[in-house]
Length: 332
Image 1 (cartoon, rainbow, N blue to C red):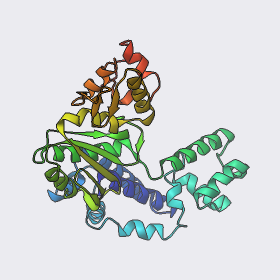
Image 2: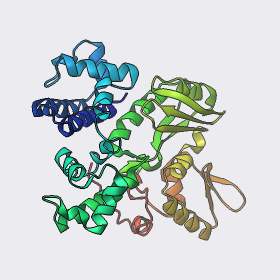
Image 3: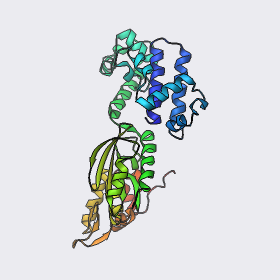
Image 4: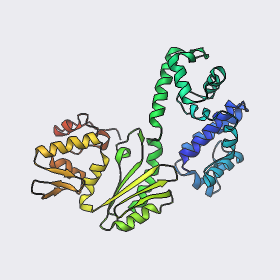
């Protein structure tokens, strides 16, 4: 399991301890441990392997044992035992912004609310106003939080997905024959949440690269394995997709796979007006003569634009700004 997943389980244990009326000091200990694990600069599995887990502040023998259990089995008996003491929908309510253990306990005991749909209905009907400290402003914020939570279902926050993707891309760069490798997709655009991890590599022979990818230690299951495209399910639950292209097409494929869809459509329309065709393989004129594609800079230069940072590629005026050399300088 990844650090973020382990931290989430520890945080959930803390919330369940409060819900079940356990010693508040125990709950705070698990909450503190979750913060420590989530903030580690290396995999907690490595710290455990070195026997240094209990050297971390706030992590004693018992919590260390739970972390070891999570790493080994992917589950934790402590969490399962606590979850069995409350209605099955309550752990999800703990993940709603603004719904800490005290708030979850209040709506559960006052209104019998034990799952997300019921919480949303109580907010919309006004029934939740009967719960202490639930005023109109807070109810509005809670409805917004529920909406965001539903939108995030099946998606992973950037701060959790990025370190994992960077670990995988670092391994890919060491694979035999790899000339270049980069993260692509919404993760490269630094979107707040991502659905899966898109990766791109350049190599004249894709077979060794694909083999290295599907056999990485982070991989739990091979979903598809082809000559230039492969998909895997990671141990974290995320799907990762790899595309391998010839080095001469790397920039074109990187631009194509980074998106966004709206940005790419606008860019291709601009190319067509100039008698050019952009694809994931390069930029070509009307006679299909190749004009570039090894780098992203070549792709943008072909249509009269300066290179546009991935974070700006949302078709919100960035093409016009690039044409007039007025792109903002991003914070680094």
